[in-house]
Amino acid sequence: MMRNVYTVKQVNAYIKNMFTQDFMLNRIYIKGEVSNCKYHTSGHLYFSLKDESGTIACVMFAGQRSGLSFRMQEGQQVIVLGSVSVYERDGRYQVYAKEIVLDGAGLLYEKFIKLKKELEEMGMFAPEYKKPIPKYVRTVGVVTAPTGAAVRDIINITRRRNPYVQILLYPALVQGDGASESVVRGIRALEEAKVDVMIVGRGGGSIEDLWAFNEENVARAVFECSVPVISAVGHETDTTIIDYVADLRAPTPSAAAELAICNYRELLETIRTEQERMHRSMRRKLEVASLHTARYAEKFRYLSPSGKLKSMRQQLADYEEQIPKAMHQRLEQEQERTRKVQEMLPLLIERNLRESRQQLAIRIERMKGLSPLAKLNQGFSYVQGSEGTVKKVADVKKGDWLRIYVTDGQIEAQVTDTKKE
Image 1 (cartoon, rainbow, N blue to C red):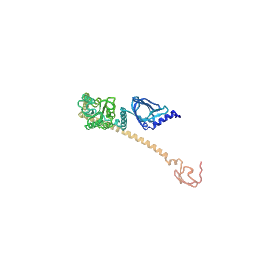
Image 2: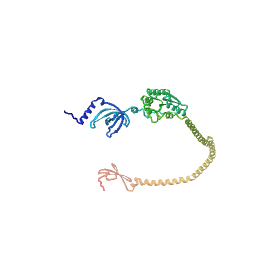
Image 3: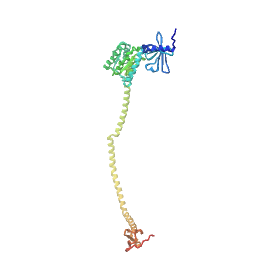
Image 4: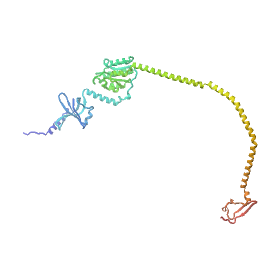
């Protein structure tokens, strides 16, 4: 009797082929708790899924990590999309994950992260769109449940801080079906009522309880509201989408009332302090102005037209007395000067005549020295050729006629020869 004997490799390959041909195992969703989670240096992620009945090994290769939007941790409830196949080397089957999402509350958190990212990319969280909260308000709109602790806290703090502020409450559903639509209607109704500031929120709770404030329609209503909105959802550690969209986030509804409403008593004290400061400042300015006025009055007395006229009259009287004396003194000086000039005039005329005769004699002698006749009388002659005065041999040539001027006449001669020394 013949027996078929197979190798381990053949058996493992056969089993793997069975898994491959099973359509359901090629694309299957498996829910369970994460255990033995390890991030390998290669980028692969190894973990197990377990429930009360058993465990199954899982792996997500580095190339599939885009299907994971959060960091895996022990104890998380997740849903894994992948395929079940056999790892031939070890002869065991495992899940090859392609996508992993959190289960239950985890799904809501993942949805929260996704919407937050989308709205942030749209610019709805940008600080330039945040409207300032008015410092002094008369009407405050509140969108919350009418019977919860949140509205009681807001009313109590408002009465304590400023009893003159009017509160307009829109009783909205803040949990369950239709809650987001109710909150949106409340925001738009209070916007039409033209309140000065709006508080939107509720008390604490689980992520499911607070989910109405993570809906996109509520976020858009807050973003589009023309009235400044303060978000006040849950406790200080709770965070919702409208906390990022609102113009101001308050950690609790009580804190929202503190931020929205000024303290009336503190305001009165501030006004009294400012009044006293203004009165002190006005008194100081009046004192300074009085000193300046007194100083200007003193200057005015010195600079008054009557004082100037009096001074000018005195100066005019002095001039009337001084001018005749000065004129008489000047006439005497001029008469004395005229007498002295008359005495010195003959002497000056005689001296000038003597000096003029001397200068004339000097000029006559100079003229004699320059006279051509005087030169001729001394034996010199003046020779003139056809080209002008002859000064050198080159000025004449053989055959030229020359005219020689001497003391008592002139001589004409013809050049027969020239000789240059």
